Image (cartoon, rainbow, N blue to C red; front, side):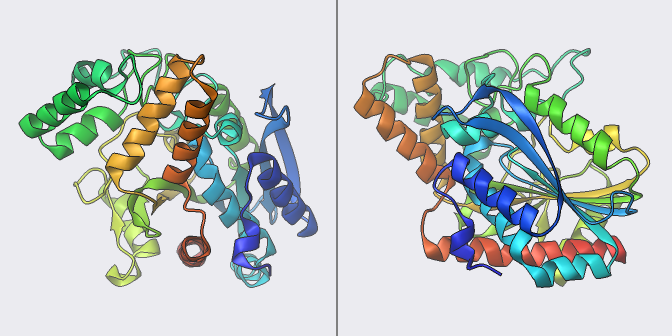
Amino acid sequence: MIEPNAAFAPSYARARVLFLEGAAAAGMAIRSHNHPLTGVDGETLAMDVALDGPADAERLLIVSSACHGVEGFCGSGVQVFATHDEAWRAHARAAGVSVLYIHALNPHGFSFQRRVTHENVDLNRNFQDFRQPLPDNPAYAELQALLLPETWPPSAEVEAAIEHWVAQHGETAFQTAVSQGQYRHADGLFYGGQAPTWSHQTLRTVLRTHARRARRIGWIDLHTGLGPSGVGERICACHDDAAALQRTRSWWGSGGQTPVTSIYDGSSTSAKLTGLMWNAAYEECPQAEYTGIALEYGTKPFPEVLQALRADHWLHRHPQAPEALRQAIRQQMRDAFYADNDHWRLQVVGQARQALFQAVDGLSA
């Protein structure tokens, strides 16, 4: 086993090396799906997949990182640590559970320290049926010009107008309007797209290849950016179904010691979202009973995280911005989604390790 802090990398390129080395040393079957573009330093980008265990196992646990690119600094560290954790690997083997690690669902965002894909799409809003009318979000349309003004930093008048909107509608309505997903403003926040992204299509290929023989599937998708710093909220990542919610709480709840929240009953720090990635598990693996969570680690207060996202999207719209401002915004994004200190990383690994063991016990029950 390696030290937890040694599992975390300062860049996407280094994170990828650590993951591939860890998976190879553990004897896992590895397959890489190369992205059509290169990274911030010209490096190869890929969605890397490593399978620990038999390909025909009836019980499969998926552990994924970097759905929201920059959040991969955290998720990759968890995956790298797991590849070196022999006690954890032995526990899964003894239970007959194969583990599928999907490293960097959104490698472009990871490399460029953005939350979105190269199409400027929030991958976790992109799993819609694009043959049908897409959800409307009129509240976001009201806020778009204020959230992404022409100049940055925003003027006092712009911020006052946002505060006025919040005073009228409430904090919860504001978070929902901004983050639930929108499909009209292609350069805006939490844009779900008009078609499946490269990451969307590639993930479906991975599920078809590796998950269609499983009878029971668990999924832990690693995220950052909501909640108290270092606390991993376990958010039910299933349909609004009583049986599925009950399974997530029986697997990961520890009798209330590590509660599982839900976007459907208001218990989660997350708003109720649209176009969520785990829809693909139901659609690509209809033969399996599916149970999943998003493990969401807090970093900074929500207003600071949102300010970083606003700045990042403003920069995307204004690529001619001065270099000093560009660098400041890049650092602001990194800090909003990755707390680069030993204490936070230890908290992340400890809680993730517990969730991994719980998932195996749930799958094998």
